[in-house]
Length: 244
Image (cartoon, rainbow, N blue to C red; front, side, top):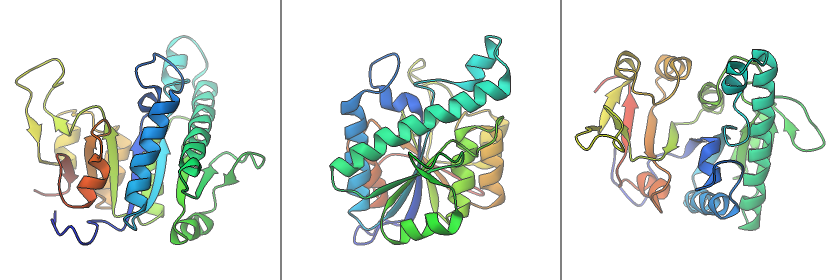
């Protein structure tokens, strides 16, 4: 990856974060200071001239798979999870607009009173007008995760990379919080991620990224300035690519 700090490494990116990232140290729901901190990170990247779109999971409010495991019908549980992502998207939109970033929430499930329906050309136009676009409600279909939604939308928006914000600073061969000898990869291939079950994203998302040669950058969302730093050509992260 180039290290020329005068120009961002990428000009249009997708930021994928989990719903759990918004709950801070709480066990559930939204933690407003955490939402505001992430909004400030997005603003710093937006101020570099980078076009940013986002997908946020819903696991801090409701997770479809968990509901299904407890006996709820899977399709219904997944739709509930999609609605949770809309709530998170609206919270992030509010935080971004409080710091002066024009933001649009676009939902795969039409709900005109609260956000726009997904129309690809309109979403691209928002990005061209330097607005942050938050895609909500996943793909609009059950059985697909927000990882897959992020990869799908990133391809549709012609993003140059997906930034996957996590609790650790890259991809490890095992959980670094449990094992002191865990090894971090600087670069790893899509196929290695699938074969070694490295847990970057689910298999559908990885396959979709691989088939469209869309790099995935895994970094720590808890590192202040980390998102901006990587776009300026520095920082610690793992790149998931086709070939090393």
